Length: 449
Image (cartoon, rainbow, N blue to C red; front, side):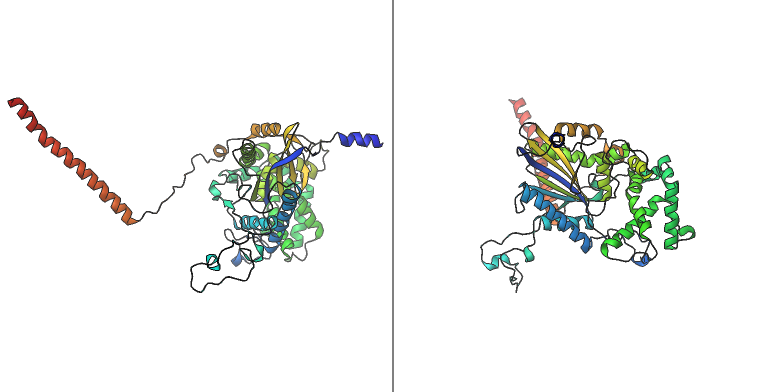
């Protein structure tokens, strides 16, 4: 028996001493935020407007702890990164939303808990020129509590395809997905209708208030999730059983909404996965020194990528929901909760070359095959490259108007330029006129001679 176990485990590949972690690309969903939908326990007068769903203290703590986990793995254990922030090693990006930017900052406080010390200069060099400025009693660190500030890069949403997955056809996709056979089958299933019935009764919803759509139910579930994380109240008659079934169906409803088939999964995953390959290639070819890239994003971003990596699908989730016999596939069914994270690691083996491994919420998941958690980089790159689509074309972004860069030029500079231009033109005209007047005189003298 022991021999059989030894042979079994010996056949499983593992990271050996001659394997070196050389590059990491991580993406996470932002931490806990305020409620997004004003559907329960919400005053319509105070309904969230714009980017009002900021990160809450619970969300800050989540991301801080995630940052500490990343520090332990990639700074302390694997020595991939320097103990203090090095701008040549790390690049952090975020969508242009308060909650994702705040998540990135919180994450980095856990990853780099100690900031920089001030240089050995006179005190006046550490003060602004304002009269009466005094140096605070915070020791030799630049900021209080050893705070470390690290740059976070953002793009406007309309230009952010990889993280914000900006696409003009998303609304149309959602409407089409609500008309499919798969969507209607799940929405009208006995167990789903039973969930709607219990939910409406427990919340006292009647008439047009009643919920009878799986996507609409997910909006209520989102509110309750925020309340649970932030310590707010839940509906007094909402049972744990109903809440459990709402949790169970949450990811399926999201997949049905926007990532219902393989074509949609390929579309929304293309920008980020293309970026993954480009960043790895640039590092391998010596065009970039960045060893760690962190991306602060949303559940929609994460689900698109996870679906594009074949780690889940609406169909496999539906089969599990209906308890159908499963083929030998890997299928994530738990919702992408706040601070969920996906990490793609690139290793170099001295004998077999480059390979990748993928972590989801700290656990290795299959890559390139149904069960294997190792994949040669060339194979990984080939598989992904074959599923990339023309994102700009499919999302009607080819005719997107590029915003011009406006430079504010002083009026005096414009007037001076015009004056110089006029003077220059005047000089050339004067020279030309003088030449015209002299040419006839020269020709007459030549004729008389």
